[in-house]
Image (cartoon, rainbow, N blue to C red; front, side, top):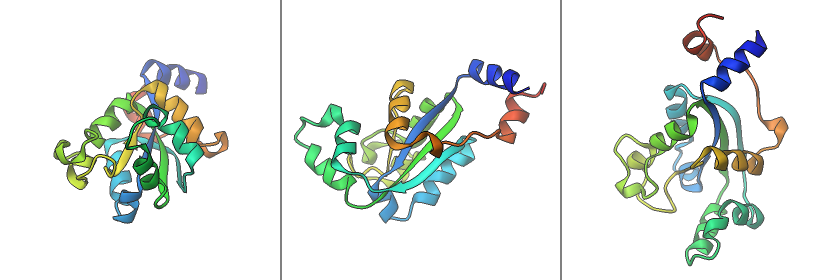
Length: 165
């Protein structure tokens, strides 16, 4: 049955992706709200931790911004307090989570999105989410050790997506 389940899962485009609740989300007490939005959407939480980031991690994570004038302030902001890192799984999870988060510029993000409802800034925009399946794979390894990722069957997935099992 596990082999059948894995075959069906892979055909349904189950993806894993990273979400970070940034320092402003932690400081404003929005962690529960952010996580609950993903849970209410039906995504499966497979990893969760609080962590303090350092320069080495930030340089790897934001390598595409490292030469930009705002990198130092971004780095300082991300180190200003711990953040919450999580891995979520679900059908087409990367796209679903990007929609839930809203556009990066929070003050113009869609109403109903996390950034649209709670953010005003560009750097201070409550959350980060992987922008592609490829980025998600890199970010999962960057923020989590293999033993911090949990495998379990989500009953909701079994009932909705796999009714014949």
